[in-house]
Image 1 (cartoon, rainbow, N blue to C red):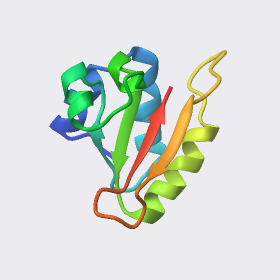
Image 2 (image 1 turned 90 degrees about the vertical axis):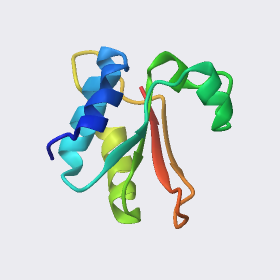
Image 3 (image 1 turned 90 degrees about the horizontal axis):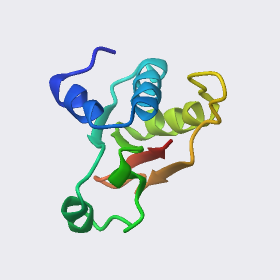
Image 4 (image 1 turned 135 degrees about the vertical axis):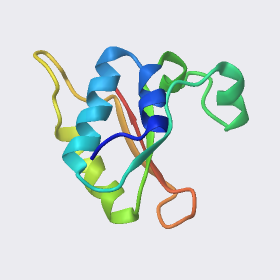
Amino acid sequence: MPLDASARHRLTHLTPHTRRHAEQLLWETNAPMSISSGRRTPARNRAVGGSPTSFHLRGRAVDFVADRDTLVRAAGLAWALRVGRGCTGPEEVILEDLGKPNQHLHVAW
C-alpha cells in the first residue's frame, strides 16, 4: 500500500531500523492500515498517558490503526518479520483496546 504524506512524516522521525520494520509491516499487511503515532516528545507522551520509558520517546515504536482483523493479522506478521541480518524482531507487540473506537496495534523494535 502506498504511504500517505502523514505516514511518511511519522516514519521520518523513527530510527532507521524501526522505520524499515514499520514500512515492511505496512507492505506485508497489504490492507488499509495507518500510523497514528511514532516518535513522541516527552510532553506528547505524557499527554497521551504513555509510559515514562516508552519506546516512542526514542523513535522505536509505532502505533497502527485499522479494523480489528487487520490489526490481529498485522500483530502476527510483526512477530515474524525480520528485516536484516541479526534482526531479532520486535520488543513489544500489543493489541490495545480491540473493539473500541481507539483500537490500535503498538509495536516496538
